[in-house]
Length: 258
Ligand code: MN
Image: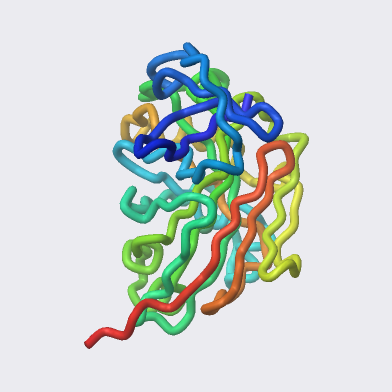
């Protein structure tokens, strides 16, 4: 099932994708189940929003693909390298990524994203997928110069608009059978099977939940394959995961600081 969050008649609604229509749900299915309102709306008549706004945190894993660790000039760490993005960075498909004026190099990182559906603390890897509500697509947008300059990643990865998520949450998804591809203006920049991930979704959830409690609506960005690169004003960046969909975001420069 593909779950959409969208604005419609001045309200924010959830629904299930059915071809080019959305079956409208009574509430957020993560908490309210799948009761429908009886309404159907045309996909083309609504604006899709980020399918989830993380309640407490966007959990990210750095260097979770060997070829990306290599292009960053190192090797992948043995354990998942965790960092957080603020939930204020989240935007949906179609929204604009804004390149900050204080950075000289903004880059795309296409990633598979797991959406947590139940409170998770100290879960075992073999039980971890029971805590996943579904999967979506993300872009871990990064001000690469600031990431390098700061020596840690909060600023470089934390700007508003630096966490596009969407277009929908797929509740029945098998990462082992899917591929990820990132395109800029239609040109393929990143392309890999999700089986290239070093640490699996289950392993990451077990590892992270030993550190902090994961809440329903928190998301896990699972790392990016090789091919990260610059995006500039006027570009359109697309991240596609087979079986979920395509997250598409235009890019512009922030207004100059006066
Ligand atoms: Mn990343």
